[in-house]
Image (tube, rainbow, N blue to C red):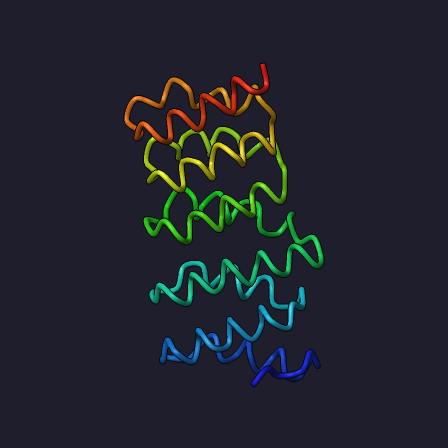
Length: 166
């Protein structure tokens, strides 16, 4: 059951983020994301470092939803760069890449390029797409020298997309 967006309910959910039980923290993160109130932003950013994988996963999703509704990009840009660089779970990194693409801040380009060689095939394509969205063809071309370690499919998709622009 989703709580209302009253200040009292949001404060209760934020307090639940400190629970010992990860299932309680996860439920609170999910509800805060569903409510979509910017008052939860700082608390949700703090959950990006939670010990429980699903808490971190739902925190990054909640932040993306809140950002789409309220543009909290100034508050989440740096945390998303940190997630991209420091998190090893590809699904969480993918959502961080989607958020960076949504934000469209060119300062993300070096971090995206740096993450490219250390990403699986799906994340590599997401990074390439984010680079196109953020910095256009010039930014996306920065991954071409890094294609050697990628699958043939990834190499072909990226090179075909770049050829389409030329």
